Image 1 (cartoon, rainbow, N blue to C red):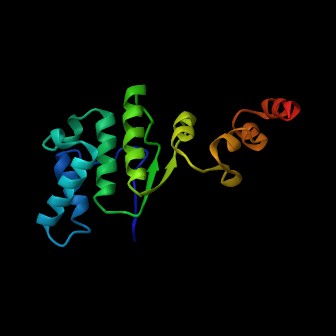
Image 2 (image 1 turned 90 degrees about the vertical axis):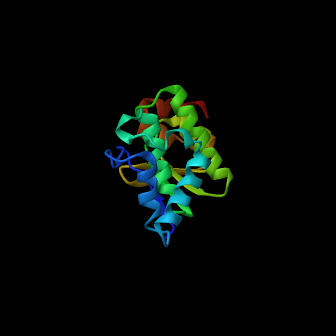
Length: 169
């Protein structure tokens, strides 16, 4: 239906290689295994993962496993990509690399919804933010506007901080 997603906890076929994981995903949308292999190679090139295609995924560092998660989702040729907590457990350098991948995909026209608790990442990537508090939408809009919304501050930092913000206005 044009939607693909990643998982908060990496869910790869650990006994398979990177290429096998991505080809398997592509096989669900490609007419033949040859076409699926070509699609997997295209995705590997797009993400700069050509060098790790033969590696078994369980031997890869976490950041590369997360890139394989993205590659599997992209192999489905989605119009909408949902990314769930991609930065969890990553170093600053690894986070920067994943941000670069996400930007590249979005700049290429892919619509991406990011669920992330690393606020710096959200601020850097987002054109528009929606904030939920216990499943209820409490704010939406441009990043800088949303981050200073008293409802958001109260929900995520506390009542006292929200009051301070209100007093400053």
